Amino acid sequence: MPETTIPPAVRRDVQILWDYHDPRHDLRPCEVGVGLGGLDLGVPAVVVDLFHRGMFPLVVFTGGNPPATAHRFPRGEAVHYAEYALAHGVPPAAILLETRATNTLENLAFTRAALAAHRLRPRSVLIVSRPYQRRRAYATCRKVWPEVEVLCAARPVPLDDYVADVGDARRVIDMVVGDTQRIDLYARLGYAVAQAIPAEVRRAYDRLVAAGYTGRLA
Figure 1: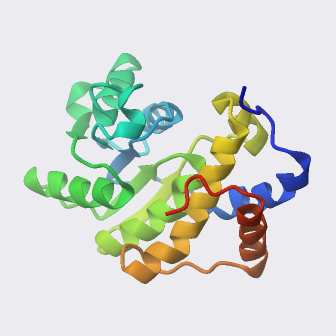
Figure 2 (figure 1 turned 180 degrees about the horizontal axis):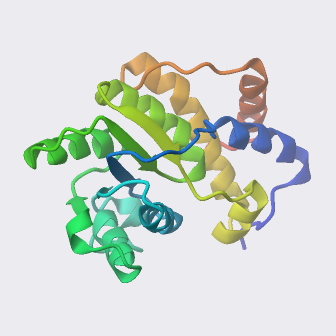
């Protein structure tokens, strides 16, 4: 059985990384919302909330059918997310689908192309992702879609509550550690703009890797 709580010995380091991935953007209305695909139904739930609050008039759900999520979303991430949004009052005319992407860079590059195909070239986008994906989504968007102003949002859930919802502490820690690695790695590979990484974050990351939380390292 997976652990459902974070081991006390690594709790502080995980919290440091969790906090780092929150860019603390002050949300305001944007021209387009973007819901990034994955396993987390918190993403379409936040999209629905933001849409009904008037934060954007149009949303693109992006995500294909990669092996990691096919068991839960057999028709593809974007399709299932859109079905959730439709069931919660978002009108069909306010939704576009991008159904090919299998990673964050493709999510944003393909979303940009899908909008351009509809002759839409927004000046601002509000990206909704998993909580620990926000900083990487921001850095990736700045690289592949540099002309837009970008804000990032996620379900406002504390770390321990998120772990309890997932039901697998190791999986969450692996994901948070993996996203931290990608902040630096993807900037060096040219997939994202560089982000400052405080020394405290680097030390917490190194300790978690040494403790064996390597399941999502690239």
